[in-house]
Image (cartoon, rainbow, N blue to C red; front, side, top):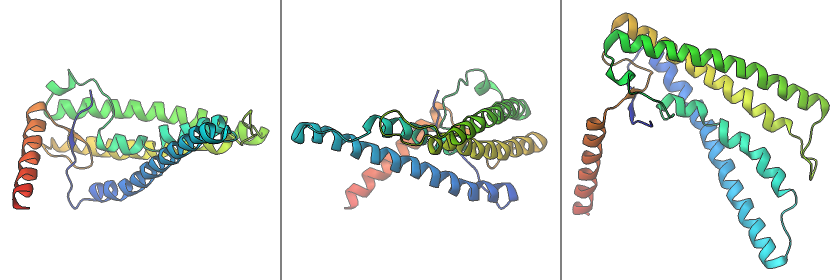
Length: 209
């Protein structure tokens, strides 16, 4: 499920590294959003061109195909930092204390191992496309930039996972109730309370205006 999260901060090196790295993740996520915006603009131009001038955008399909990598991967580390990914937490949500941090630590370590394998495979895929001069079918658009995005974005994700391993390991050692640098999944009651508080603040603001 997709859950709302809270991320605690303090003055530790872990929290500082988390906040600094989040700026990079936010920038990449913004870049992915810009690509989506440009793709919407391109699609609009393609539709209007067909309708008004009976002329489509040259290489429209090629541009769409290449943009998919930017849209799918640039925000992946940002999502992981906020705990916005889809997860099944029926069992994990029942755990508390060190057992919870141990299970979360184990899952993140497994994610890191899988991510490293994906980085290796996608890097080889990029190098092959760059060496052979691989291009799209319609307008011969080089494919290596889109293929380079995958290992780069996954490398950022790997660094995020390393930070979370640090956070979960620290929480495991200290048995912390509010560990920093990791997303704390909120239960339904907490989410409802925050939503109610947000609505109340909005109503107060509208009444004052």
